[in-house]
Length: 72
Image (cartoon, helix red, strand yellow):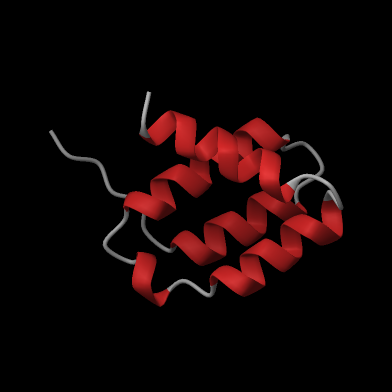
């Protein structure tokens, strides 16, 4: 069975803006977005800026977590 996240950019931006979400939550969604067929249409600069706005030192950590989830 294959799962695919839809509306990746909107989902990511919503999670980043949600104070209940933590970096690990966003990293999981970031991972799914990286693997999605929508990945080419995602405005990654916009997503990354939103992450930096919420967590000024969190972008590298989130990307590393997402990468580790993709490549165990």
